[in-house]
Length: 311
Image (tube, rainbow, N blue to C red):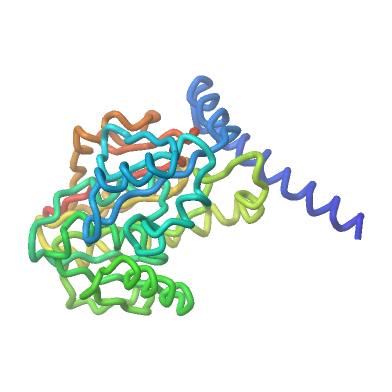
């Protein structure tokens, strides 16, 4: 009905207005302008190669054969950014159908690059579906690490299994469980927590579906869940082990505030972001040595921090 349709549109627009107001409140004028400009951008498609099945040279040759323009960001040689809206053409090719590539925003590729994973280490992906980071971890390590992928939702866990199979990531232990309830006797060398969040960093003003569910309540609820997950993850980490915490949000309540709350518990320290990631378009983070990615044409808004367990 027209009345309901108009009301729904007004509510959606108010969600975007609330996000802009929060950005204006939390950031300096110039940084707020950068973020809002990124929200108004048209985001390009990107993907990464699957090292288990191909290499960057072979994929680049295939794209040139198809007449598809692309560029490789300097900080990750496995990544490709499509210059035009050629995603459908790539998805229709065997390099996608065979699992040689995986579509993923550049920002989402950052967490597995934050720490060097050594052969035979025990790795946990706490909120793994649909498998973007799990498959990237296996690809980067060429399958030489022991990966446990945890996903609470049954349907999403099935999607995770599907993507692992398509990418040829055999040997991953998939747990359909709430990561907060994992056995306390478990211990891991590396943990990745890409926590459920409000998605404020993924918002595109021209695409209402990206912010239809966004709300102040979602931000608050997400922050509470994030801290629970982070504390649990740290409890499962071996001494000297590293946990990478990340969200696709640009709001401090879900990012720096969560990390600072966990740090007040003691026994952890911040590890500086690797130099290779210094070329990523960043905003000022309230915690030194963490990474806050500015949204734009190629990147979603994103936060990532490396925490080492010291005690």
